[in-house]
Image 1 (cartoon, rainbow, N blue to C red):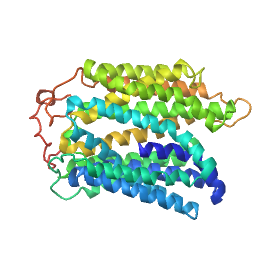
Image 2 (cartoon, helix red, strand yellow):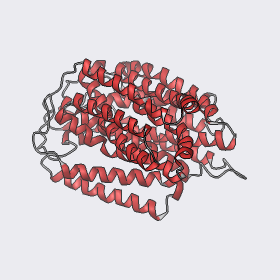
Image 3 (cartoon, rainbow, N blue to C red):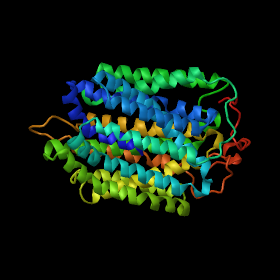
Image 4 (cartoon, one colour):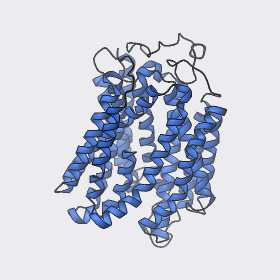
Length: 460
């Protein structure tokens, strides 16, 4: 919740920050890009560290480091310090996010996990909705530095809560040395991919910087797969990499979060640059979508327990695609926004519950890191797709003409998620805690893993 709040309040604070620090537009953009690069690059590594050294320890380190970086930004004398500390914020945010999902997995049995996952989703939605409103009030009355100061007491309260609540830790995995080579390749590959996608709105898909970044990410990805297959202690254990429900959930989260973020990017441009609304009025227009998302998350958790992940995921994915297509004429007003919010709540709760719920407790961190990576890379891809299709063109004659093609492209991206949604478990399963989501030994064609997951030495 604190990470979602920080990301949304920053958008409102950036214009004031630019004026106060005398920064350029490119420098202000890097205050967002630096965070995005580090948080996306280190999520899986952070999850693996939590599996090895304990999730409570990683969560405490992450939240206190996030608070320290926030305090440093509030005192920063120049934009260079802000950029560097935002990168540090991203690193500590990466430590925090997989740990929260892993702690949920360890605190609740699989058949009771849907409700806490739904509550977590609702809390993130509330934070995302409140961020622009809170940021606007803080910037108007106290200045842009106040949006970072507010993180400090929130982080300290979260740290105290983590210390007060005892969560049983599973048997630690990864007795051998940490997979430093795999970690370095993964960090470099994800960073190159996110950096290339973040540059698409400025350069386009066919510009040399974009092609070089995408090519570099692909090359590093190939090296990573080969390294992982040969390593005795892979970063992503074989039991996780071979799980169809886990990988399908990753793909579904990537397409759905990408479609939603791209739609928000397109509609925000329409509301502000074409219809002339201010940031505060735009935030108010987003509230109905967020309200349906927040209210729909608990209902999605109940429906998942009753009807199974596959049906709810297919329904939610279809609603996301229909909702985005409906925005072609509504720009987040009326039924289109409500349908989009309801569909995304169903997808997020179902996919998250599937990927985390029956994962081996010893690998809950790395699976949480994979989930968070998908929901960080997805938005970067969705915004790049929207920009490449024409959204965000300069105001003037024909302004907003690219919105309809962009929204239709994003609806198609959401519809692609129907394929991975169809691969999720078909009905609620009473799997043992050590089984992977929706799998049993017969489905994998091999012996089921032990309660805390297979040994790290298992090769793919």
